[in-house]
Image (tube, rainbow, N blue to C red):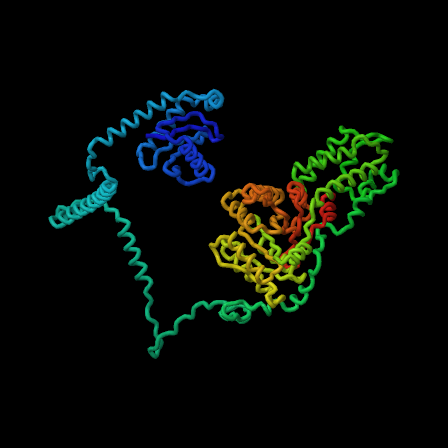
Length: 629
């Protein structure tokens, strides 16, 4: 007997529900909901799901976005459920296909009770008849093995028939030649096998070489074959190209890998990080205020581009026709603001932020009177620069060195967790942060929390080994337990270990994961909620533009939704941002604007290269200047 049969759309609207022997409606409903979550949402490969003592089987109709689900007692093991789902599916489609295409069925519902009961009764009767009838033994001729055997026998028969006909023809020819009654017959075509044999004999006979001998009977020397070319730095010997140093017990010796470079690196990053100046080395104040023009120079179109501070993004303001003491209106700014939005979008600024910046600029310009283009250009630059600076200025400032000192005074380590998608450079930039903290005199414990990716622990071990050469006496240490472990529990043990050994900072590495992978995002939320790090850094790639914004938003929302401490009012969120490959984007710095605006969290670090000192803080003036070009 059926417990429950229901038909609903993928949007959640129930079109039909049949309650058979449903003694526990709440349990049946919960079983169907679990099946939806497991099969439809998480994409399970099976169409059935077990929940307590119930079994739910699901069939999907992708054309009309329909789902057919049936729930039965697990112990019944009904064999006709697949046929029931198929027949109900066809019956429902045939009856309501017009309403489904028009979309009226979702509004008016359907009356499918009688049809369903008729199909159900018919299938149950067929099942009872088949179950009561004696089961006939299957004949060998009905099996697949017989089909394969019959096919092979037929092929062998055809081959034997061909051989027999050939033999009969040859026997007739011999008999005629012996009896003298041989008649001229057409030449028989040679088979492919005979032709191949003759060709092989010819090649073998022609390939034999006569033995060459000299006058005194000795064999002639063999011809010298082609020798391999010996390159200047090649050959079998690797002594000339082996620059590695011998290792002891399989551990790489990093003492000789630094040389003068290690001496130069040590002491180069003490104190706060410097701002990144790569995008624009010019003074922003010069760029913003180098627009003081004479009125007679503004009226000369040949000198306008030279005297307006390089023009740049605001060069399109010259299209506004200003007469003496004319007031700027919204009609004047419509084409200008459209070009401004296009310019900001080309710099990877999100559309929502571009519209807000244009609205802010419009409110600053409309209704004011300008006598020359100079005043309008200056006002527009100052207004937009002020808006961009306000967005990039964080609501709260993260001072890592100060926070580490406060935690050290309280007798506990300062914990930083690095998270992000695959391949953005979490482990590499963790090593840069570790080097910066070591430069400032703190003891650092690195936690190999990426227990999934092959080589992740070895990568961190290499970084720690190199840094321990510059900073010996256990200033830096790696805490790892190999692969396959629970990252949340591993980080918990590492923090406890750091507190016992008096380490100042704990840097927790995590496995890369896509923002849409719900199981992995729940695992990350568990790690953050269990260990409560002082700083949770999202590591994003500046090269991907606004894709990094989507990643950051979904990472942050997942931490909030899956936070264990959400009921207590302390939700886990992303505390800061680390932008990698920031030196590769030239002036397309809009991703930094978008990420800071949407989350309100500061950009704590930016990665600017592949060496340990290539870690900077965000220079707000430099980013604003790059956007104003």
